[in-house]
Length: 432
Ligand code: 4AD
Ligand code: MG
Image 1 (cartoon, helix red, strand yellow):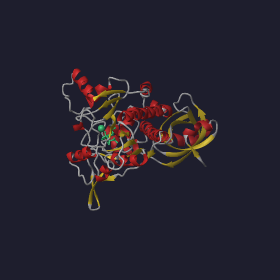
Image 2 (cartoon, helix red, strand yellow; image 1 turned 180 degrees about the vertical axis):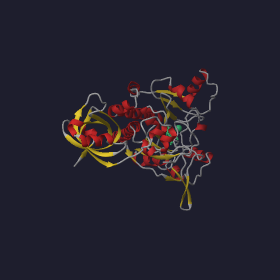
Image 3 (cartoon, protein in one colour; image 1 turned 135 degrees about the vertical axis):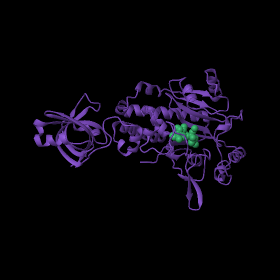
Image 4 (cartoon, rainbow, N blue to C red; image 1 turned 90 degrees about the vertical axis):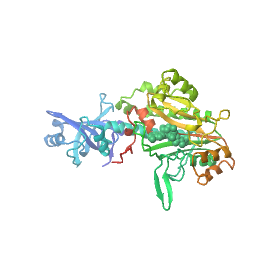
């Protein structure tokens, strides 16, 4: 017997089919039982009519407990009242695996309890919706970059390089050598761009950050495009086009999940309109100072209240351009007329979701880059391969990194980044 899932419901209206499912809830009154079911693809209702199925099957239906797994047979019917648009008129039930005392009941649970039960919490319709949106963003990323002529290149996870500073590294032994888990694939992607022109990566990255905020994960996934013969202003155009493409793809393909999350779709539609505003770091500092933020002086990095204030000047994401050199990584290209700033930008999401992209043009001057490497306390020997890229046919190039979970959190309108990854690694949490 072939099982179908409810995402095929449209093709089977009026037909009797079988579905592998779990019971999420049920209620019954007299001669009718309503089973709330999920089959992995969707959450839907099964209706059991005592007069149709007989006493025995009706009693089975009434006795089903939460998260019991079953093969349920029935006829697909259109149902305009449900979000999905279809329901199942049940004709048979075969219990596959019993479930007793399922810990996550329909009542409210505290965050710690849910996090301890993340392996089960994933089954909820809310988590399902977030993971579907995550999946759509990943799918649309491959589609976008392939359409734009990029190829996917996979940088290593075990590495000796530390592009984003040496204080937040996860150290590990690599036989007799010291190694780290990758913070960013960027340096390798620069090598790949010199080989293949336009490249992107998508993979896990690790930061031993001691920050416990709603935006930080210890392990997160990043998309990192890198482009040869590309200046920073052109890179910004790729970035906004990419982000708008992701938002549009979610609007097109995740409507039902956005509804589950009660996400404001009119807001999302605005985020597909280009271009996004650009503001220089200098102007951002002046704007903050003029609006009562006395805690910021030129040279400081922005905190989330500052980013939020700047982002609130627009109804779409905003780029903050050209930060002070001293607060950015060693590889960023110095501004040709202003050595105190670099050619970079952070893209700040609206609604207080903070930085979703960090990117820059890369320093190509051999001398300046090797000085920077020394200044940042890195070993010139370890980075000699990276310096090689500036020796053999170096070209202007730029790239950026988009944090997948930041993007998912923003698009799904989720409060905390921990729900945007199946099994979050957080400060003091590596379980389950
Ligand atoms: O700004 P970041 O540190 O930039 C880089 O790593 C560059 N090497 C990227 C590049 O140019 N190829 O990180 C990029 C993005 C941030 O904008 C943010 O979205 C996300 O990665 N990110 C995090 N997401 C979750 N938890 C954390 N701890 C994150 N740190 C950065
Ligand atoms: Mg950054």
